[in-house]
Length: 436
Image 1 (cartoon, rainbow, N blue to C red):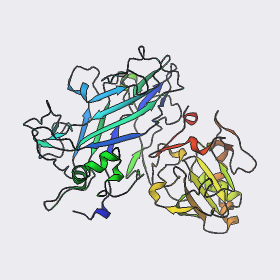
Image 2 (image 1 turned 30 degrees about the vertical axis):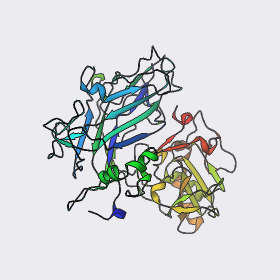
Image 3 (image 1 turned 60 degrees about the vertical axis):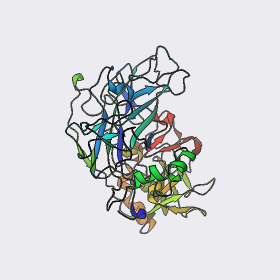
Image 4 (image 1 turned 180 degrees about the horizontal axis):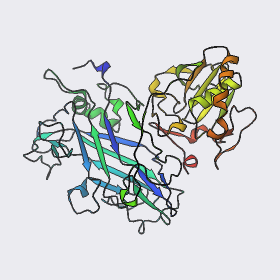
């Protein structure tokens, strides 16, 4: 087995996004105000005495995106509830909003199968090789117990008018909630030479420590300490998904019955640093200050590296930085007390690339700033910025939540708000006024 220090949790797990649809038909992604939380449990069925490791290449799905009614076994494993409304039950469909009209946040949750056929890493439907326990026991066809995966996501539609106007729906067009589902692809280290994997070892050997720490993974000293590593690898679909703004229809071909059929294009997640600049890395802001602070502009909801760096170059600044995905800073020196940290602490994509690169450390994070330095004479870099700056006025367009920039700001807009109003959720910025 690989040395513990070289192992990183590289598991891919996803859940369907929730959208709000206006009465006029436009849709926007709801605010995932607590992100996606993933839990692993080491629970054993009563007829199995040990956990089996997840093999390399193992994958599975939970739920059925084409499901439109309940009454089957999935009712126990795919559920929703209003977490802030007393008495709201867990239901396989969306909550009863007529009964709970104050519900403006729902928690969507998925339990994955925890019994395995002991041999197949996948199946044609991604489900036949796994099964749920029946009466606390693994069925004879799936006698191996694997760690139990549970995922939940809080989704707020506060401020949209729902319940009352419009409707919520899953990304596939499902307005019932029954079609909610999740996907899992294993990226954990695998066992070899008669040993157990780090996942199983942690669940078995760190049970007391994890329970005492309310399940926080860092409490297990067997597991590598690697957080915020949410970087995309490979090509992704080049499509606006309505994150933080309204789009005419649901992304992709959903729902096809409504006549929305389009062929997606693909783009690479790789970003290149604009000519005349070099990336210095990810810096943690000093207490009560900013790594770069000569100018600092917020609320740039279409920010790209080119527009930020060109703006700083035009003002003659030596350094440029991007934070919170949509904030551009310029300075001629790095503030004392700033510290270089791992690139994974700057996981955010640039706001202008919502459906482009995700993660990769290009546009900062939660009180962390990705810093770039001019590689040549500042005057030369500024001269090369003219072509980019010609598009800044349209790219960095103000919205209803923004105010006119002060004279010290390097670009055209700013947002008057306290930094603490922002919250990092993997590669996404959560801020209600920026999402509506």
